[in-house]
Amino acid sequence: MDAPRKGLFKGRSTGRRLVAVAAAVVAVGATATFAATADAAVPGAPTGMTTVFSDDFTGTAGTGLNTTNWLYDIGTSYPGGAANWGTGEVETMTNSTNNVYQDGSGNLVIKPIRDAGGNWTSGRVETQRTDFAAPAGGKVRIEARLQQPNVSGAAAAGYWPAFWALGAAARPVGATNWPSIGEWDVMEDVNGRSSVFAALHCGTASGGPCNETTGLTSGEHACSGCQTAFHTYAVEYDRSVSPEQLRWYLDGTQYFSLNSSQLDATTWNNATQHGFFVILNVAIGGGFPAAFGGGPTSATQSGVPMLVDYVAVYQSTGSSTTTPPTTTPPTGGTRDAYSTIQAESFDASAGVQTETSSEGGQDVGYIANGDWMQYNNVNFGTGGVKDFLTRVASGAGSGISGLVEVRIDSRSNAPIGSFALANTGGWQTWQSIPANVSNVTGTHTVFLTFTSGQAADFVNVNWFQFRK
Image (cartoon, rainbow, N blue to C red; front, side):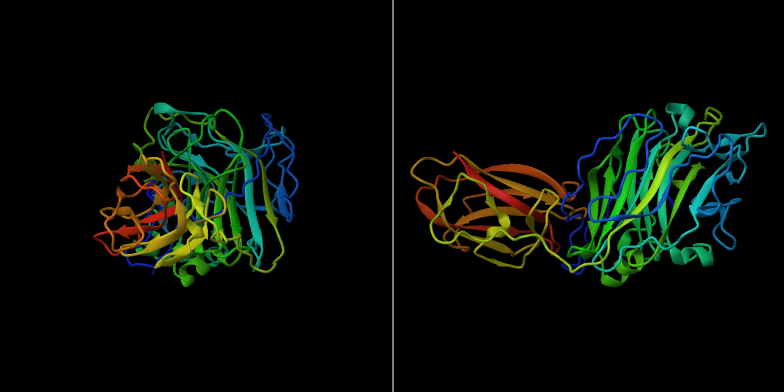
């Protein structure tokens, strides 16, 4: 949770294929039903996983935490670590039951308080265990059900609740090795904005492959009712697929993801392939709230808590790496131009790779200037063609764009239609974009070709079709 998050997702590097696709994952979050009550039992482990840690916070009202499970962070920094927890926040963390306690109704309460002198205290707690990890070929899921502080507007200025995990190697050295050891932000919110931010922090402390100090982040994701009711937040690290994946969930629905192909192997492995410990805290002030208006101010309300119903960690054992099925070209016959043609079903291609799609199955990614895909025996019939529709996504950097083109029978023929594309918000943030085409009849070989004035990857393609 170090240092200001600005809701910016770096995406790919301009170095072609040195850094790979972000967010190319299967949206595997199962739909779940979440009770509206303040106290829900810790859910059983997802299919194929076992529960390796849980705390339901069922202690007597006003009591502190079970220190077999948890330790308290005290003061304004780790011993030997960066001042103000490295983020510029202004509170002092305590182990007082004024700030951190169980409420007798099955919840942990973390309450920031301002004293008469304007000084803030709050709570920050960590799991004693630092070994929450995904084994090779397996998964780990870190989950909590919680209610963000029920405060908004001017009264919320400076509030910064968070649920996150930090690499085990941080603890012996006061996190002075941040961010290389990895930080997974599962839930952050600032200034009572009815939203959630997710992020991976990794690499070097400024800039680098992970765009620090911002990190690789979901940006601001709407979270209606997150101040007034309990919601479930989770991150899952999956080493059973290739490339490996990190997925973030809100109430069981995946809303953000990253994969190992986005980063060089050393950076990714250093940020993922080891144990983690879990942290819960409510900070006041600092770089992240400052990026969204600042605080605290004299109008900031004291004493509004984050409530945590449970924390659970689930794990699966290792197994062989699997990949999703590939859509193969049809055997003989023709393709219907007016039906969906999956991009990965090409008969030939150059410069592209297939990858797991957040919409299921696969898409084609790593597409840059000069790349192409070929689709044989596409039947347009005898009628007229109005346009073609393509499902595309882009996480290209600022100033990077290109053309998606359709050509008939030869890549050297002039395009019969095209459209320009720049960043859509992420490599798995999909849009269906239409473009007019010249009239075509009969059966033809169709080429999707890609033209850009830059060398960087600029588009992913999931599917396309023609329309009458």
